[in-house]
Image 1 (tube, chains in turn yellow, cyan):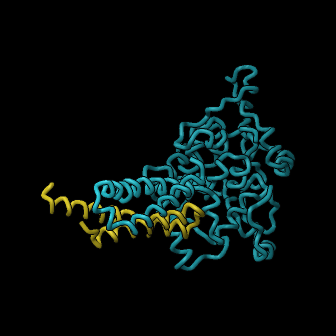
Image 2 (tube, chains in turn yellow, cyan):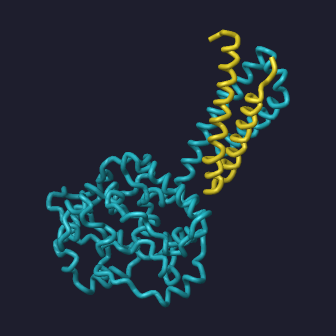
Image 3 (cartoon, one colour):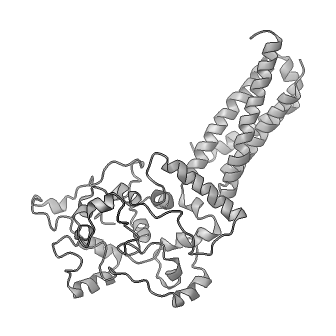
Length: 65
Length: 308
């Protein structure tokens, strides 16, 4: 089993989201709040969704669903 | 949770994420690795999302956050005006509102969606700050007239508020105030709010976080004094003794207006006009003169008449 590009993208997006959250938690200003709200949260959500889609696709391939 | 814990947690999560990226090929090939990916890419991000949203939303209610934009600094300073007629200043200085959440307490509509609307407005403020035309200091306007509900959230039903004769005379009734037909702040009664243009001339209490800009110091001399029909009346003196606002002796008014806020509150007597008050009740002022609010305990504004 090899990792798909979707899985790699999920890891990168989650990491990006965490980084934005990290910056916002270190010093919360309107700019960092916006960074977290506009970039961090979408990255985390999309990353989780990509991972979930990848898992679902693999399960379908194995006829586990 | 201590303030540093989420940061440590996030650092660990970041390092773990890098490890995942490097070892991804090996991880997907093993059962244990796939379980690790499940935790790292589903459980952990959702948990961090919850922590981050909660903490940022909580921190965005604080005064320091609101005044972190340069154009709002003067509003922070205006909370230190040493004049009991300035409504935000007297509420802030006497902790009638939580000092660390002063902006949020008074500028969030107390409705079902008030919090949500405040956040949307805040996002718009950020947009204007970075992309729009920022109004000069002192010319920031509210989107709509200040609703009485924001005042009445604490004052509604308060004994001293309802007893005050000014709230029952001169075409003002409690019903009009409660139904927002008569504005608390725009009707000439409590119209000394953040008077930024006169900030340069005002004396300040305590140690403001930001100094008064030099531009305002010059503007203070040119700014005309606002007409205030109640200027001679101390808004925090108990006028419920039957005389009403207009019935006060001029000498008393003058001496009252010259007193600092702390002294004025000291002479307030909640029971002055209450025939039904039990003897000795003046020594035991009731604490619960207000309805329940949604604010956390301990942060609730002090009841009117509380000595600072």
